[in-house]
Each structure stands twice: as structure tokens, then as C-alpha cells.
Amino acid sequence: MLTPLPSESSQRLRAFFTEAGYTEPNLRTYLGAAELPSRRLRNQPRLLDRTSAPTLLNALLRWFWLGCAQNKSLLAGAVPDELLSMLLETGLVEANGEWLTAAAMVLPIDDVLVASDHPSAFEQHQSELVLWPNPTSKFLNRFAVRNHSNATLDLGAGGGILSLYAARHSDLVTATDLNPRAITFAKFNTWLNGVDNIEFLTGDCFAPVSGRQFDLILSNPPFFITPQTDYLFCDNPIDLDGLCRRLVKEAPAHLNEGGYMQMLCEWAQISGQPWEERIAEWLQDTGCDAWVMKGWTQNPAEYAQHRISETSSDASKDAGQYEGYMEYYNRHGVEAIHDGLIVMRRRTGTNWVRIEEVPKIPTSDMGKVILASFAAHDLLEAVQEDAKLLAMSPQLVPNVRLEQICAQVEGRWQPEAFTLRLITGFPFNITVQPLAAEFLGALDGTRTAEEAIQSFASAANAPLETVRRECLAMIRKLIERGFFVVPAS
Image (cartoon, rainbow, N blue to C red; front, side):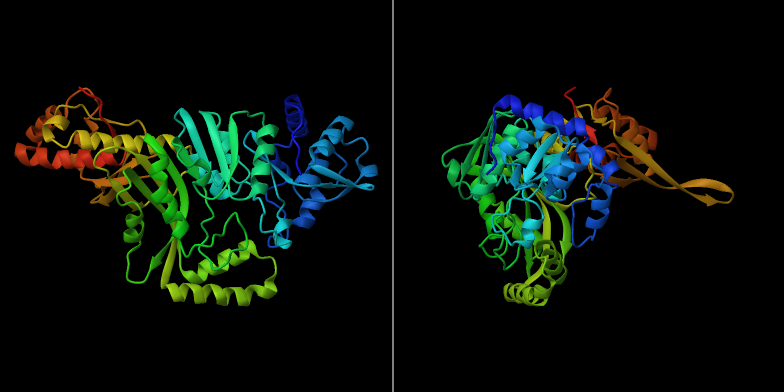
């Protein structure tokens, strides 16, 4: 069991790790790549060789990265007595005679330290394994809305990485998980990082917070679509994507007006049903606006191989597992499996739902992009009447660029295509005609849309009503995609 010490000890313990160079940027350089030890990657010999010198950093890496036992006599002079005492008191390190073994993995993620189970727990087939911060939790954290929140729910918190970040802009974070071991790790990680505004509850789905509402709900649930129920962190007993559907249906009752729910999920594409229809049904009559961003798609055979390689270290069982997976998918008519992010916002009134496959996901902080996209939809609803939009002064956002492609014609470069592109956030782009590009460039916030349209129609010697109709349609499309801000004139 991991045991928090008095609060001042966590600061001292973090300082030891930082001073030793046990930070994410440094380890990427020091190890060549901050990859975990893996039989699949066959990287343990290289990592052992890289950490062979008797230094404090190598001692920490061998315990908390590689999961190696170390002899006390070999650590003399490398590990300060004060640090070793704290590691033993917290239970991060356990003594067995002359050997000292780490009881957990400790990963540096940005500026926090997160304790979890070691990857070797897969080899022990530990069903209550507490996963380390993985790409999906990091992904969701990048998309998290960071408005001030009176109350935030981290549903299925695992080791608590999302809670630690949400605590920075929340008065109170409630972290829940079905797995009691996960709650133990999350509590310890809260202490380890000096955070004091997170509460912990154990239970299934929304049961631990019955009757409560939140400004923000974050969830990285056990969404794997498999016939297995081996690990609590990724498997669930509900057929196909039923758990994710349930969370979408139940979430609105736990959102305050204007509150957001952000959830990573996977959903099945069933024979005879477009994938958009399946996910749209989840969002019917929720009282929420919603944006579904579909990421990758895999066919069942690829998906089965991928999931088996992730969760099983015994290759001798691969054939039997694969056969079971494929029988499950065939029985349910699964043609493909999609993953994505669902963002919901509780709002009284007529709600909108946007379902789409998004371009390549950028690496930047996407919370502001989410907020801007929902604000754009609000704006479009407010300017449904042409007169209202015509009275406003649209302005292209600073991260818009116009790209021109030219072809050589008779010894001269002749414009062939113009593309308006966002260079930050989602790389949305739209092809425009040369005259349209000139018109859009004139929208700099200093004139109303009506003034710009009249000027454009006059310069093009075109019917005003036709130009107005086409320009307004283009402006609305670009507002929706985040190319414009439209302050009131």
C-alpha cells in the first residue's frame, strides 16, 4: 500500500526527483526515447545498459522505470539516506533482505509525477491493474476545457492524471473509479504533487455522484470493444459500445447549464448502418449540444490483433484469443471500429449535433479550440437572420493563411488554386476562387459585412442580391470552421 506522508514531505520528495534529472524532457534525451521497458520492443537490454552507472538518476530509473530490484550495497553513495527513508516510508520502495524493489512505476508527465502499476503487471494478469498515463489520457488532457469550474468530475479517474490538471482550474475535483486500487493510487498521486482540492469516491459510472451536477466532466472510460473482461481499466461487461452509450445518455443529468462533458470512446459500425447514425442515436434528446470528432478506423481483424498485442504477453494464446474476438465481431455484425472524442454542452433550447471525421489532430492545447467552436455555433444561431449578420463586422482570425498554387502558362505563373487554411488548432481548409479570396481579405473588422459585399459586387460588376446570398453563405461556413470572429459592430 502506498502511504502519503506529511504534506511537506511531498515537496521534498519531488525535489529529489527533479534535482536528479527525473523529468520528462530530460529522460527523452537521456534514454534516447522515453519508452517503457517492453518485451515487444525488446528494449530492456539497452535500457539496462544506459542506466548501469551508479548515479541517483540511474537508481531511480531502475526502480521506477525498469522495475528492477537493486542491492543496498550498490546504492551506497548514490541514493541519499533521506530520500531512501521517504521511499521506504511511502511504500514506493520495499525492502526484502538486502534487496530493494519498487512497488510502483513513477512517471514524470510535464510537471507532475504519477505513480501507477508497472507494465510487468500485464504478465501477472492483474485484473485491477492501474495503468500509467498513456496516450489516451494525455490526449484527453490536451482537449480539456480549462474554464474556471466550481465542480469537476473525473469519471474513471484511474491514477488521477486528469484530476491533477483539472485541480488547477477547479474549486473541487471529484475523482471516481470502480477499481479501489485506482483510487488508492490517485490519492497518493494527489499527495505526491501537493494538491489538496480533489475528493475520491469508489463506484460504477455515475452512481457515486448521484444527484450532483458539475461544470465539467472528463472521462476516459474502459471503452475497448472486445469479448474480454480481463482488466478494469480497459474492459467492461456491456456488449460492444454499450457502456459509452450509457455514459452519454446519463451525463446530462449531472451537468450544470453550460457545463461540458468530454469523453474518449470507441463505437462499432454495424452492418447496414452508417457509423454516423449509431453515434447520433446516443445524442438524441440529451438537452446538449454535441461535437463528435472521429479519429481512426480499424476493421475487426486489425483491431483484434492490436488489442491482443496490447493486453497479452503470452503469444501462445494469440490464436485462441483472435478466434474468440472474430467470432464476437461476426456475431454482432461489426464491420469496423471507430475511435473519437465526444464533447457535450448542456444548454436549454434547440440543440445542435455535429458529427464528423476531423483532420490530423494537432499537438497544441485544444481546450480553447473546443470553446471557440461552441461559441461559433452560438454565433451562427444568433445571426440566422441575414440582416443581423450583415450588420456585423467579420474579421479573419490571426491564424488564417491564404495559399496560392500557380501553374506555368506561356512563360508566366498563372494562379491555379487558392486555399484558405488554419495553421493552428485543427488544420481546416477551404478552396476559394480568386475573387472570393480578395473579398475575404477585405474583411478585417473595420467594415460591416453589408459594406464589404456592396463594394465587392460593384467591383465585380455582379448582381448585388446574388453576391450577397453567396457571400453570406461563405461567411457562415467560415464562422462555423473558426476562420472568423464576428464582434458586434
